[in-house]
Length: 592
Image (tube, rainbow, N blue to C red; front, side):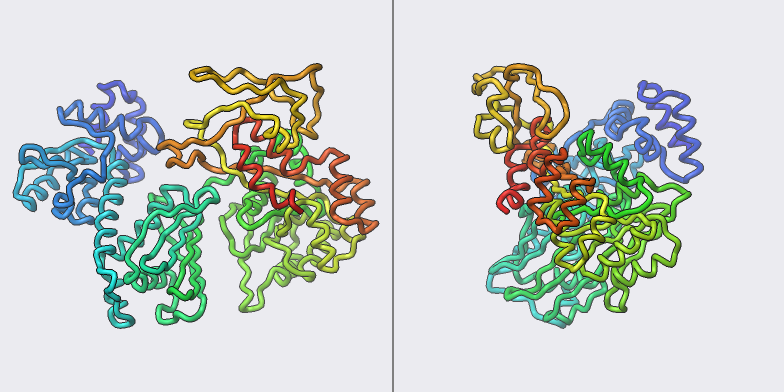
């Protein structure tokens, strides 16, 4: 505790922390048995780099704010076992005049430096660094070492099966290589990890913001060891290679609990694995954070507070339908409501809501789970997906008997959901009396604000977003070094609002370029575009007349519905995404 107080007093003397803040943080650290640095950084009283800088200045040692992993000599890494480096948060990174420079998260703790001096037989010099910087560098540098080990095998070498397979799986390089896949995936915000056998190598790709990126390779001979390692963690049968298998892993990565869904399938080149990552501690988004326009947000907030009826969310796999439903439930989740969900699987735990995971192998399906829910006195029910006639009919029955039901369907647009339910032999008059609204959605990548580049769109660009070029001034390219002009975009199509007379200044569009902040992709995160079909009286008449989806869409648009592409144009005009993203995400619906 004396050392903790000494550290705090250094920060107070340097003006990085107030005396009151120090006393408060020391009290919390003592109560929780945590280190002062962790409390200060977790509460944002002092950031990790400022902490390291103050300590370095006080003790007269150097400070590093960036470690070039590729430039760290391999012979220095060989001196330190990875467990020792992680335990003491240190990493030798350079050698100068026969002295090893060691980045340390706590330069006051010199005992591990003495151990390193004994291991290397050379003098060692401490250099202050933020612990997070060291932890990231440790993972990167030992991953490089493991990748070298996994790629050194000759192309003709083959890994023996069964007997040696288990032995190889227990070897540290393979275990560390697989663990680093998870660590890097979380660091890079990946939603999926694909491990694919090629002709001569194992290829790993991460899905980030909906797009797959190749990230690393290993020699093909190590595929059985990699597959076996993943199967062991997921409690799968490592000897069964002819059939697909599904499992689950729970890992703690960077202090977060991550649920990993594992799927393996046999291919002609070997077993292929896909790992879906779900952050169990991710903060649930609220409806305003999902990208709704003002009008749609107001309408959605009114709909989700209705006492009964069905609200459907549609879109392809990975379009964020479950996230939208969770945001809706979170918005209305109060102690006076009994909210139940049946899902496949339960992706995130919602406080105060009872969630059921379906298990078809034992007869627990969406339909049977929903039927059981009706005996649990529910107010609101969420069904993960309507897949068949039975589930659809029970959901409609629940809505007609005084329950609010949320669910999803796989259709390209909002009006297509009606046709899909009719295909399931749901009677149109039941839809007309129970359906409140259908929300179709897509996720488009959000432009990186750090490196997005403005340009003035052409007439063709505007027309592709269903904007009228005559509403704007003539296009003109930006001159070299010229700042883009201020532009005021008119209301997007279908939005209420009067248009000033005469052409408006041509709006700015943005395109991705790429920088370190966005890992040179040009995008960081995703945002939704939406098509909200509200079942009012004119739309209800179309349902009763068994009209096709195009007729329903036409009437809905006349009533003010904006299509996916029109809502995408709003995000492009706001500079949040690019023209190419919106066109790519709405192409399927337009073609149909």
